[in-house]
Image (tube, rainbow, N blue to C red; front, side):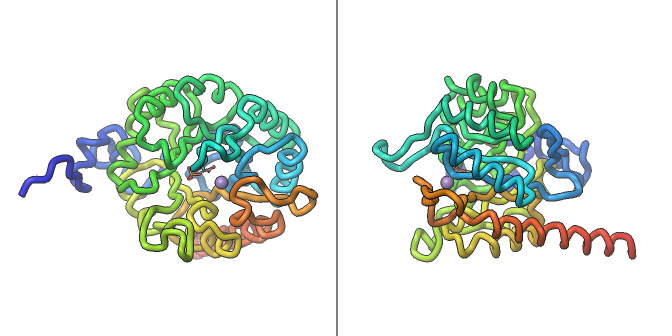
Length: 297
Ligand code: PEP
Ligand code: MN
C-alpha cells in the first residue's frame, strides 16, 4: 500500500539537500559547521550553556537571574518576551518591553541573548534586540515564520516540534537555510510519547542526537527543562544529553534571592543558580578528561 506524505531517512537528500551530509559533503562525515553568536561558538570544542528565566517578567527578576547565571558560568542568556501559552488567559510575555530588558541584561553581563519569535510580523523587531532568534516547538512547522527568520540574518535556535520526526525537523531547518542562512542550531526539547505528563512533561529523545549528527553538520543542543518538566530531573538529563553528544544545553533558572522567586511560568522545572553551577562544573571536568584522553591517544 502506498501512503501519501510518508517520509523515510532515505528521503533526506530530497527534503534537505542543503543540510544533508549526503548531498552537501562540505563537512565530511562527522565535522560540525560551527555557529557563532558573538563570542559564543556552537559546535566548537566546548558545549555551550544557555540559561535564564522561562519568561522575562520584569526588569528586576531578569537582571537578577542574568547576573546569577553569569556567576554560575553560563555562556548565553535566555528569556521569553513572546510566550506560547496553552491558554490566552495565561501570561503572554511583556513583548517589546521584555526585549529591551534582555538587551539591558546583555549589556550588563556580556551574555548574548536568545529569545523566541512566534509571529512573522515581529521577526524584524525581535532581530533588532536578540543575538539569536528562537523558533519554539509549537512553531517548528510554521513555514512563513521559518522563511522570515531565514531572511533575518541572525543565528537561529530551532527547537524540535514536540511531535516531529527527524525528517520533518531537518526539513524545517532547510526552510531557513534555503533563504541563505545556515547559522542554525538544532534543539531537542522532548517529544509527545507515553510519559504525557504522568512522570515527565515530555519524553527526552536523546537517541535522536547521534542521528542528527550523522545526517547533518548543524550543531545540536538539548533542553533538559521543557523535556522533563521537573527541577529534580534537569541535572541528570543534562549529563545524559552530553553523553549522547549534545553540543550544548538550554536551561531554565530561577533566582532563589528574589522574594518573588516563584516564576509565573514553568516554576516546577526551574533550577537554582547553584545547580546550574554544578552542571557547568561537570561539563568543565568532563572536558578536561576528554582532552587528557585525546592527548594520551
Ligand atoms: C521555551 O524555550 O521558552 C519554550 C517555550 O520551549 P518549547 O518551544 O520547547 O516548548
Ligand atoms: Mn518555559
